[in-house]
Amino acid sequence: MRKLFIFWLLILALSVVALTDTLHIIAGEVNYGIGSTQTTITNGKVMIGNTTIIATSITIIGQKDLSGNVNWTTAQATGRVFIYTGNATAIARSMVYNLNTNVGTLSGMASMTINASGGQISIQSSTLQFNTKTNFYTGQGSPTVITKKDIYIQGKQFSYDSAKNYLDITGNVYLYNSSTKEKAHADELVMDTSNNKIVLKKVQMEIMVGAGS
Image (tube, rainbow, N blue to C red; front, side, top):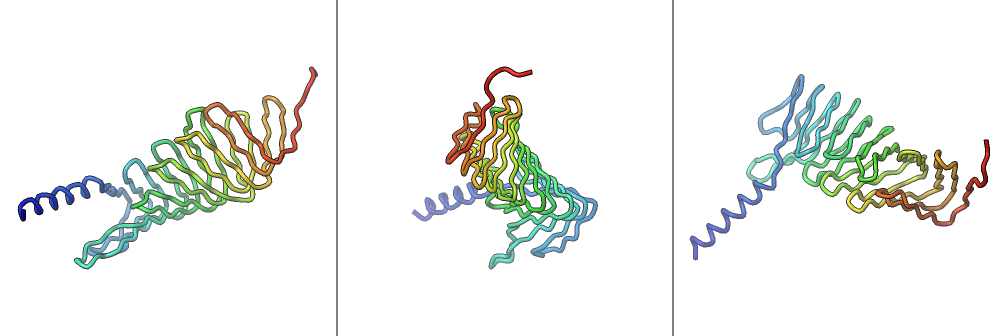
């Protein structure tokens, strides 16, 4: 029984190691102390999984356990911050990225371009949050601007589920399609980004009819 217990403990330990991402750092200068819970990176980049962070300054923050081992938990980037993920790129003035949950929060005139199934989606907002594992995005700003081909949407906050092609925008929503000259104002807009089908709630809309030169 004791041998069986030790065997399962070993399997569990290997499983935890297998799920752990390796943090890679490339920088002009790194301020690092053995056993320290803070590492400062100047003019460099951090790579974890399929996410790359490039910034003027990046601070990696960790927590020590009872054995003195450091668990690196957070990357804080400032300056001109660039983020590259498996299906998106982003620019912001600052970012906080949780190394364990893979959730990043961008602030300071944040902009992001997402490679969606129905074409690229560009987003500009005061704050943007993204999850590189679930490909789920949220944000808010006054305004938040989203463009996709000829479609321009403006609102106050949004959520986008890339796996479900589901985009939801709320708060004084304005829609303009430059190819058809359609305009709309609504409380909420829901869009299937795979085929650009849109549902507007509490809407006022203008549609051009007839032929004109």
